[in-house]
Image (cartoon, helix red, strand yellow):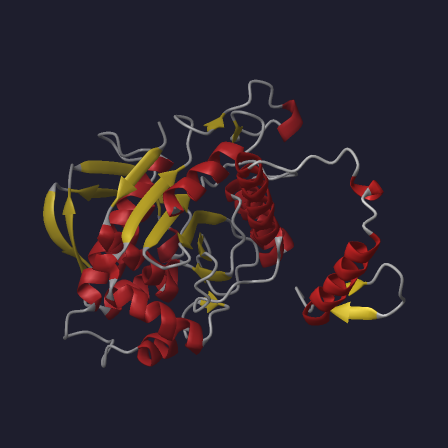
Length: 364
């Protein structure tokens, strides 16, 4: 069974890392070189029907059977599915105020440790999909070790840029990201400190004796320890909590780390609305102006105003999460020769159709 969780507070994920054509249809009439628009196309069709009635020549319809209601319904369903596929494959971004289509936000956390660092990986990959009516949200977690053609997906953004990353996300989820939010360690620490720390209830104690000491500019490792229970974490402490990968007591995996990230995000959105913090007044403009000093995003202020309303009403939004892992959609290839010998993850069925269908089901 897919790992799916529901939590209305999780809509805060929209903003925690925010801090840290179609054209006019034209037709060419069968016996004319004149190009007509959809408005007078129907007039031309009516004219043709009138001529046909006068001649009463039905030879061109011989052998054509009129469709039953059931067959018409199947045909319409097929056409609707094709339209959805065309929308999903389109690279034209949707807008958050267009409630005829889903809106997708790609949230990326990179392991950039200092300002001039040129080579980094994308360690956090989450796609937030809002339903067309904005009453549902699906958050899809994609592990950093998923294979993406020539290398793991965590290298795609740094090596090939944001559009290539969007392409890979679309292949996996069937959803084209409309906007990107990209944050690093400094932005995460700033976001937590900006709300005067986050209150987190650590469910179980653990120790990580191999935590990288790179935040201090050193290459050694240190030991970090967390006791069970409720505690207030500042930015650096919260970063240790969400970043640790080699903890004891079942906390030594990327999946466990993902759960801790979600926990801190839920705590942050609660603390954002407290009166005594950096974000005053609580408006989209303040949010946007402060956040864009710290992170990369292609959001506009207008986008932020729309999504700020979503954030304020998160209790009315049904939020579900899909976490891709080896228990559902992914597997580790037995023969790694096609993957440069790397330990990686690939789709169990050779494609991601099941993931596409699951997201569509949860949105409807």
